[in-house]
Length: 128
Image (cartoon, rainbow, N blue to C red; front, top):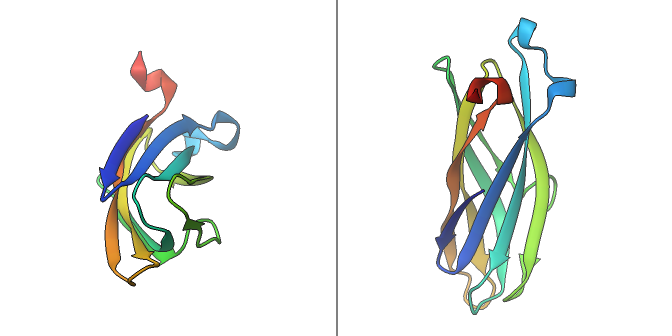
């Protein structure tokens, strides 16, 4: 698991290779990632947007940006945690992702970029 903390917002990521949905002979590798967003700050925050940079080990770089996370824009009170699972397709057996969330503090409307830590996605046979 990888973790980053920005202004009291802790983001942790855990990945898993999905062999049932992957097809290595067609260079198609599917990974899921579980994100935990913990509000350890003193303020209620609203997650507005996400931005991802996805690196495939074959040299391909993609970006993904949009509102919220998996169709939600959660509001987190101090001490609350929001978890979700999403996925990524790669054309190679290794890659990495990193990104940021745009959150807004409810009390004053201040918008803050929260770091999503860099994490790797590697098929298990590459680890031998």
